[in-house]
Image (tube, rainbow, N blue to C red; front, side, top):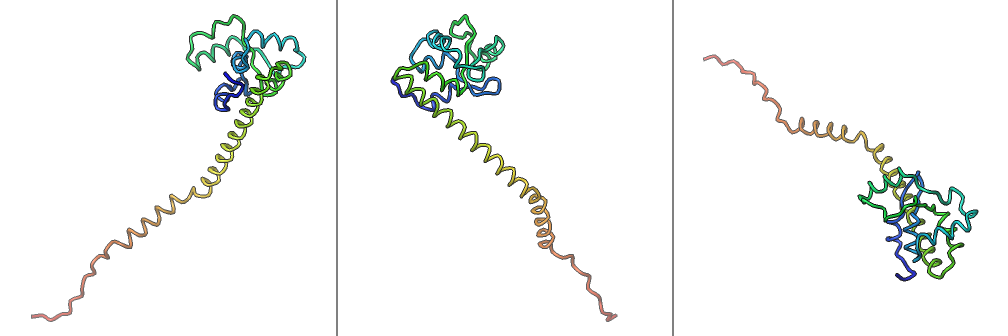
Length: 170
């Protein structure tokens, strides 16, 4: 795999866990072209750079949920609970993994996080606009129904009036 990874591929590897967008250590290691254990060793050697809002370890329940979500029966044979990295944690990884490939991949990952944020904002903007349109046109169905009723009444022939007979009695 070359140093350039598409933003679309990276975006599929970004998960939401505990309300945060994160990437699994094994996914990051694969993108960086290193073993997961080597990535985690580099992090542990520089643990002060990774506070809990940058990186945290998943629980057994969270792993079970991921397995269920992705329909996998195993999680790559790992014995240790995996770590996940937030956007800030991924950015910090570039300071501990200093290979040319890591730098290039890190740039692409940062772009993927930005792209996801832009998409979320676009969706929020669309949702707000739809709500506004909904509010603006909520009574239109009732008004249109009333207009059709009025048109139907206008199109109905008037009931024939009974003619007065002027009396010529024969």
